Amino acid sequence: MIRAFTIASGKGGTGKTTVTVNLGTSLAQLGKETYILDADIGMANLGLVLGLEDAPVTLHEVLAGKAKVEDAIYEGPNGVKVVPSGISLQGFQNADPDHLRDVMRDLVDRCDYLLVDAAAGISKDGVVALAICDEVILVVNPELSSMADALKTKILTEMVGGKVYGAIINRSGMENTEIRRHSVEDVLGVRVIDMIPEDPNVRRSAAYKTPVVVKYPASESSRAFRRIAADIAGVE
Ligand code: ADP
Ligand code: MG
Image (cartoon, rainbow, N blue to C red):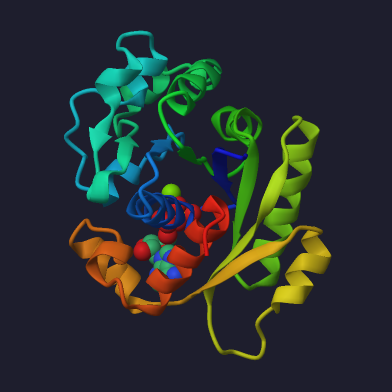
């Protein structure tokens, strides 16, 4: 059974953090012990979107060897456990991404599922994140540039010994200029797990620092997140 997933893309802004938070919360709603970890140690915002920006201990201190992992675990919505990263540049400088693998191993022993929100691009912390988990989920937007980035990330994942589980097309709409599901599968050579529509409720819920699956559970995006959680957990 696959239990640890890295949520990755090429560039930032495709929806990695949104997917990590909402998929993690949906898995917790299914009764699964779920941890979400912010491995985007340079541009951390997992804690920010969940109102944990004042967390006294974060992944930064753990990666700097100044704190234990258990001191950086916080309770999130519906019982999802959150390991945020710090937002200070000083903390980023002291954090050693080489320790990410140990942190990930420690966390995966505690839970049913671990989701790792990866850094965009090909920085060291971003690349480490592609290899530490069992499999990678690529978050792509339905446009050519995003697909090109995702393809690069897939190749990079395989170069560092990782494996791609599938892709999520985020922010899909009705425009007929959009790249279709089967084209994404052809170009990336991976399964499209599901599509999440462009949904204003995602942004609305962000204003409340609450995942959309909690704030607007009946919305189209929430339904999609729950379908993906069920796919991962192997439930109907
Ligand atoms: P990343 O972590 O990949 O940089 P984010 O998850 O922070 O991306 O998303 C970038 C922005 O897009 C955020 O403001 C977020 O609220 C918004 N967003 C993400 N997914 C959707 C969606 N399906 N519908 C509407 N807005 C979205
Ligand atoms: Mg992010």
